[in-house]
Length: 282
Image (cartoon, rainbow, N blue to C red):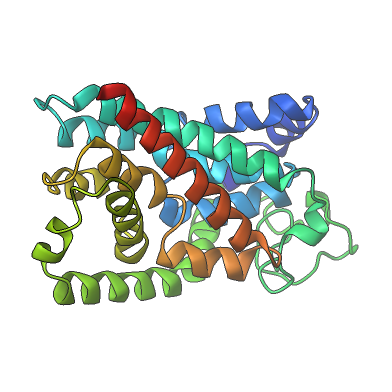
């Protein structure tokens, strides 16, 4: 949808904003686009190709899977009628918004040319799968493959390319999730639920290994009734930003060191934020 129907000029206008405003604007855009983490990495890659600075693209990539309306609604349904309804719904959105912006600021103003790995940067700026445009530049006019074809055909072309790219990682993530759910008994999780730091780290590790979609993970988190608000929030904030399938996607798509940066920042922000919320609600 973004590759076909959102003009490149929209991202060019965003990139002309002062950098301190680009990152909050990109995070806020997560409210408007129903992108889960399964597709956020190809979208971020395409946004960089369309002219958006890496820091803003990464902010959108991390914010959209938590802030988009479908996820907010699913979280509301999962916790409907429970005393922790508002802490879970608002806490997830607020903490996700902050974490996405912090990662964006840490990533900073890296040049797009060095931000994407060469192997993953085989999309021309128009998003097609050719290795290079005819003139050798990154402008969309050079490709010309989508200039005159119907939008539905361009949409299908983009969709097929993105699905092929991320499908292998989704399969791996599903395999990890199936193995963990089969091998780890619920009694093991219950034994650590009453230890504050350990429970937070456990739920973050579980979110990483299960690799659930952000549009349905709230129903899984809500089932861990033995854990408090903080650990459940840690599960819902950490997972959509850093899980097993995303780790492989990040490493295959972005430059060296990006995975470590995201892992470190998201871990710290999630731990500090969830501990603070636990203290607030008593």
